Length: 633
Image (tube, rainbow, N blue to C red; front, side, top):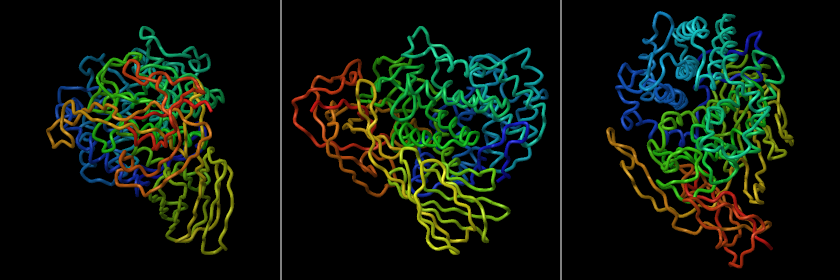
């Protein structure tokens, strides 16, 4: 693993410094989740999907030489190294060796013209740059820096004659991220000139969100690249990325303006925003594309390093613990293109999407379009990598929480931090700090804003036991740490009610959103479950078998039930935590256009009998109601 690299001047100082890929490895339920991904579609995609088979142009073949190979590697590489999985590493290395052999004398990388694409499109190379920066952080391959430098030289010589266009023009910040990474390792000021050209030629997202015109669902005929959901998920980081170089406080502030506009007009309870595949408004039956979920997570991870704002980590956890598992089957063999907060039927049928196709919400190999098939792999492994970061003061910060083990060197001293927890399902987090020799450094723990405060207990060798309450934000402890010192953080997890459009209510506990699970009848459309090499992975339709049209009592009784997390963390049959609430059927709330109808305005009158309802984490309910009307009392 390579040494940490903070921003060098004239870039703005780093708020936090991401650790090398592989420094944080998952344990407990989080390792089980990543292992499910490795043993599911991610680990079998090359044999299950011809687009990434041996004839891919990035492997020297003749098919699909655009974004799908780079997207796949952007998840495969981090998954291989956070799991320390030799077969996955070997698979990734085969692609990397092929790509490293593809640079032309003028610095261009890979295919000049993919099938159906304009020649010399830099967008897939921007993804590939991210792949190679991660790979270099993991293994320190000396070929990477000159390889990327040569491509930046190509950009410097050719961007004036061949300016950014289409996807690359709207996703320019992804290219600038890698250029800044390269600058921090070479000090080559010409790289900052290249980054500046990308920003000037790129779409002006700061203006887009400062004067936001897209306040409702996008008509099909008005769908353009600035309204595209994935472009926006990537764009959330653009202001922060460019602020590092510009130093303009308005660039920094534009991050928060972007999030606020997307929340206000298109936000969903899971922390994402709708886009099926363009801005789709606030209705809980509009879709959110899986690519947007993982790209929003990545934007937040990068912004955490740039800005250090704990509110961004609160958002990251909410998306990661709900929207990410909520759009894949529990065994990670199939995924949706569009997920819905109120999702009562997943079939091939017309729905009021902005412009997506009839199969967009089924669970399968390639519903609607293959970008998500190639791109979703980055979600879990990049979350693991960013659970911990270094701080400029020579310390470490627990940015997000999950069972994990950190290996790092602080002040020249190797150390490990073991994090034992079932968070987000339970609120207790236990850290054991094991430096190889006594070591003084600051340790920052994030207290989520939704908790208000948290209690911590420290047991160290040279002090009496300490207990204190920490307010929301960063709680920093600086002292001499000895092997075996422990900290226990107890984060209260009271149930919270969020009021949404028309008075609908959503229930939260910790970072989890809770949904009513609907009984499921699964129909296999094509493929085979858990296929062997060479067999097609499954496509499923899901139909409801139990009632779903319930309203909740506003202040009804509620019970929480916890159990240990199973080897399938988001198993619908065995959820780690459930809520018991009281509700009533609303007979007039019925299906419309193959979806649940609009949530009735609250309070809603119903004369049905009270029923005890069992709610589960959003990610454990493939068919679900998440936004409920409230009963009239």
